[in-house]
Length: 481
Image (cartoon, rainbow, N blue to C red; front, side, top):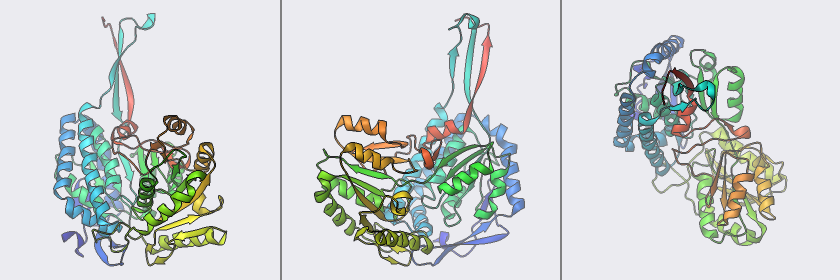
């Protein structure tokens, strides 16, 4: 496949392909083979990309909505047409099993389609001002105007769709976007650049710059990029806020998502299967992968063996195998970290019910019980295929345990009791509560984001469009209603 040839793949500077001053090698996480070489832009190329975005910003925001919508729809169609190639590319650079890579491509297709639809209907409104005597004869027109070019910093775990969640809303509102993909997984973003280049978007509307992380500081601080959309670790996210305190920063950060098994839930086989799958589906490398499983004491003896059985049935191995469900972690350092955290919990008295062993970059799907609430497996984001089981004495105790974290992205509550569902929505300190399922559910059109250490702002196409714009008011005088 052309995507995996040694010829350096170009970066995209103001919509045009260019070779860089250096090359970045991309390796397959499963076996370490080199899959591609990527052009790393130099300082001059980065400067030209930023200057082009700033220069085109005013023109682009005035581009008719139908033009932007058609470009986004064209991207959606092309992604669908090239779905097999792109899924293979995701698996090659990221290591996620092919079945999950295919789902990621289909989601990106949908994300761009949603953006095309929203581009046509995203508008402001009229506000009558004669609600007070001083406003008689006046009317306000409220418009959404792009804040300016967007710096989009994307993670490795969803190298296509999380790029799409930044690029599509920006283009939909008429904001130029500069993408900094993860150094480990730049290929999907560069493929997207190739597809964007086939549209009629103006020059400068997008750039894809796989600069190394240490060279990103200049982009973060550049005042010509007033918006930063970041998905990644909590540590890096808050450092961006400190480096650019006057910018509008949207962040989706880490989490250690909880799934709660409530006393009324009876379909324990279903819950065990869903939790096993979505604690491990990206080798646990998803911000909303299940990590903490909080089980009511009345259900523990029946549920935990079912969970262990479901986890043990998951197939690991080469992610290109269509039957494999759990692939490698992104690199061996992260796999060692996960293994070490499991050992640390075991040394502190936890019981490893299944898994816990590492081979290279692959960690066996793991279930651990009796983990001290001070252990990293409970307090931090493991970002690996590990489920931590705790016991709750009633719903209120389960809510308290779920809230016992510095994170707050999403939580899943297995209940059919409507009252408990509403109590969960009120009590759980998270951005989203999923009733009757795992916290890993996400629809690409819904508002998505967290509280506490899990970030600020919201993704989801329309929500991101609102974040990338600001309201401007025009007051008309002498209006007869």
